[in-house]
Length: 363
Image (tube, rainbow, N blue to C red; front, side, top):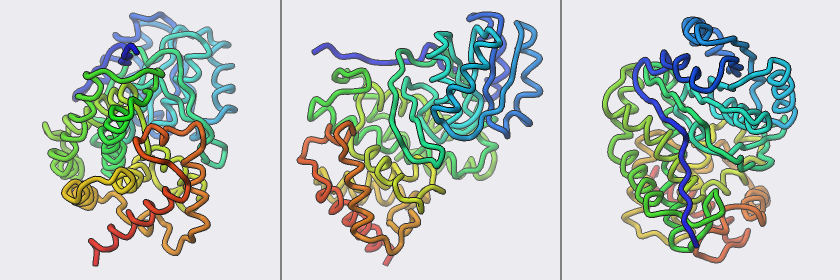
């Protein structure tokens, strides 16, 4: 089977990178539609808009906070009415996913300007669609990756540090899931097996989070950009995006999807739930104790969840956890890329084992 490796068209990262947006968009056309989350709409875009207006017409629309079919359809109608040549998303993962879906349906280029480094959504062709209540519905695979990704680390460092930590939780899964796919010869997002490039980038992603994560968190809490923070922003955004999409997903993201059935976890970020999925996957794949210790120590140092209580699920019943496990084991889920037998009761067991190890370490 041929390997397939997926990349965004261009990736730009660094302090002040957002000032290049107008210049970069000019390569794609003259009518630019911008979808923005509320906070950057008021605080980031005003000084940037003149540089975009200098290269063409601009329309800005506020994102309604949830990536749903209804929101995609609403924005698509506005894009078509404006006659846009490009779509730019400014904000978090759901804003970016929505813009990717709209651009795909409109068949025009899209640019991603993440304001937080909490997910690998900016670089990927995946669009995660939720219900109005925030329950995971499906992951659509779009025909192309974003044409442009601009990550301004001066912007990223202004966001609460919890976003950066959540991004590290998401990035933490990249190597473990890609490694399971490599062993199983599981399919990646393109429906093929991963390349050695994909697996190498996935491992580099894990090593970067392990070696520089705490230093980057310290810098973020101080509101400063350091080399370690630049490394982690790149790991969270580019390495994780390339690694998961071209290497493949497995248990951690399926467990995240399963957890969304419980209302008590709705306050958590994507990467926080994924991180607990990683811990459960360590028991699922029978990792040696030195690896389990390494990952739990890292999660604890970063403030990522290591127990069900940390997820807001103190006192959760086995029946509720079985519902999580059943959704995680749905036929279309990536958990079936794991090189082990997958059943809901086995996932229930590893969820409880991961929680027990987390509680043991806190005793």
